[in-house]
Each structure stands twice: as structure tokens, then as C-alpha cells.
Image (cartoon, rainbow, N blue to C red; front, side, top):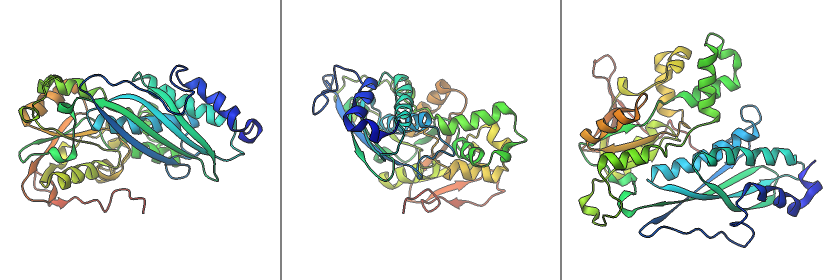
Length: 338
């Protein structure tokens, strides 16, 4: 059955099954914020052939990744999700089952975080496009911003990097991973197809920083800079430094890499994928060293302090052993649409 066979209303009837009936059905969704909470909104656009393809991504995985990308942006702001809306463009020849499977993947991810699809729109297009808008809430005292980094802050990453890029390579070239154990191969592919937004980090962070949400004196709080690493670890660190008008020193040996990644490619390529591969959806946070060390202890394996914020504007990748010269990190090697 194709989309053209059931039409717009027929498709809407099917898709509303994935939404809470008490929220959808009007011209807009209504969501109640708790007192003293800020509304946080983010939008992502995913296009067939650019962000997903049948070669590497099932409809369910495309839906999961679309939801995860937006929830990750909320986590990077210190916000907890309220709901998402979905703008969907499809061809008339798109199978109805493809769309239903896409929404199944969306809800499978969202249900992990008690979040619902609360509305959206559909239209005809020559290219399948998924536009997600996610809504979250956060206390004004707990919003993370890229511009909050201070000289002397430790730079924390909440997990390993480069695994998603390795998973994509395995999906595109299955023969590439013939020498890997099946469990290692599966872990890298899962990192690409089913990334997990790090909303779990937020309650630990607030506990360690002793951030009671009712305190309204922002000056009494420790400022924390944050961003997710969806466009690569190097991109996140450079973006934070630009917005905060500071520099950074990153220790190459401190960047956490998965065992499977280091078994798949040489060390230099693994490091390059960690810095520039993207789509790992971890958080990059800048905060005082003592608090940073407490956070990574609570987060466990994969979390690490990878460097510190410095004066100036250069973001340097260094080597404490002296084997490698300092390397300036830039945005030029990260993914750019144009």
C-alpha cells in the first residue's frame, strides 16, 4: 500500500495512533510547564540520502536517530523533554509501512524518556524529509550554554567517541570488519543506528553541583558550558571556545575510545574519527575540575576529563609524552552541509 492509496487523512489517522489522544486533534498541542521553568525548543531536519539511507538505516533506526538527535540537543541545554512534533514530507509512492515503521522507531526512543509525539504535519515531496521540533523545560538556574566556559575549567566528555563513524563504515563496507568479534561489530553498528541521548547525565550533574532548582540567584551558581558532540568532538570544543571567547588544551591520550574502535582501525584513524566523525551524541561539559572528577566517577566507564579551558583563542590537541607536536583544532575538518 502506497501513501497515494490512502491520502493525507488516511495517513494522519494511522500516525495519530503514535500520539496521546488527549493532546492531538486540534490546531496545536498544549503542554503545561511547571512553575519557574523555562521552555527550551530545538529543531532538526533530516533528509533521505543525507542523514539516512536504506543502505545503512532501517525506517525504525531512522526514526530512533531523529528522536535521539533532538533529545540530545535538549540534554545539551540542561533541559528535560516534554514532547516533539514531526513534520514529514514523503512521495506518493512511499510505502505506508515505511512511514509506520519510522514512527515506531521514533516512539521506541521517546518512550525511554517518557516523551510523546504531540503533533506535526505531512506533505508531498520528491524527497523524504523528517523535521523534528522538540520541546523541553529547564530551571533558569540549570540551563547550560556554550558561552559559560571559564578559564581553568575542566573539559568533560560523557562517553567514548568515534564509534558511530566506525559503525557507519561497517554498514557501508561489511568486509571491513571481518577480523572483529561479532559482539564488537554489533556494538559499533548499534552506536550508529541507535545512539542514546545523555539525558541521564543531568540529574547527576545537578546533584554534584548542588543545584537546587528553586534558587533564583543565578550569580550564586556555578556556570557550566555544554554542547552535544553530534557534529564531532572537535566541533563541540571549538564551538564552546568561540562562544566563550577562550581557548583550550586537549590531551590526545585522554580522549576515550571504545575497544572495538581501536581493534578496527589504527590509532591515528581512531583519533580522527573521534574528533571529526560525529553522531556520537555525547555531552561536552566545562566545569571546575573537582566537580568534573566527581561527575566522571559517577558516570563510569567512557566518561573522561580530556583537557582544560585556557586563555587566548587557540584550541590545541597536545601530547604530554612529546611524541606528537601540538595540533590546532578547527571546524574545517568537521561535517559541513555546504
